[in-house]
Figure 1 (cartoon, rainbow, N blue to C red):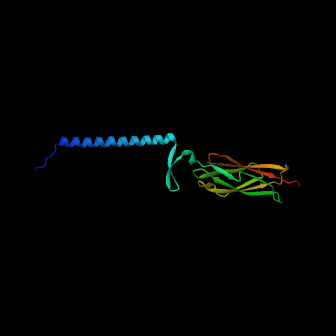
Figure 2 (figure 1 turned 90 degrees about the vertical axis):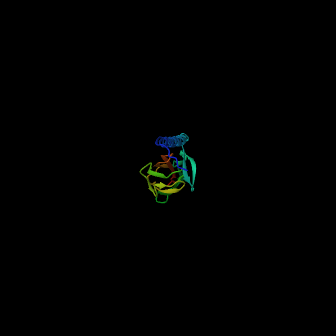
Figure 3 (figure 1 turned 30 degrees about the vertical axis):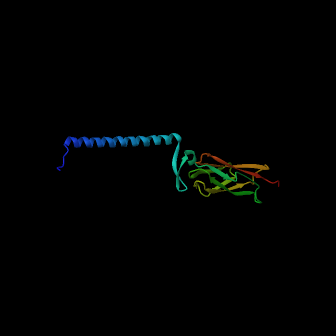
Length: 166
């Protein structure tokens, strides 16, 4: 049987129809992806790898959250009139916590930050030093303010110092 050849115009029509079908399917696919992206924006969720698997997480879960341990320190000075302590800082959020500044509320307070970056669900520590020699009241408060990228920044850690009578 002899092979039939299609005319040039028939071949051109088939090519155009195939291209139109491809363009139509591709634009529908992009529209579906756009709808999915819009839905993600509206619900403010995203896929995130957690423990080796992808899970939907709320955007608020991705923000670091700082927590102190202990939450408040109540102490007395040593025999030389100093208070030294280490305080744990926990990151209960979903992203890395970065401390940008830690300051005491008065000149008698000093602080040493061991690591300013704390991975999610991990802990770090800060060392506090307070010179109580100039304290005249029996009970004194010294606050340490931690500025960071956490949702509860700035966070304040309070040290209550009970000075014994001399």
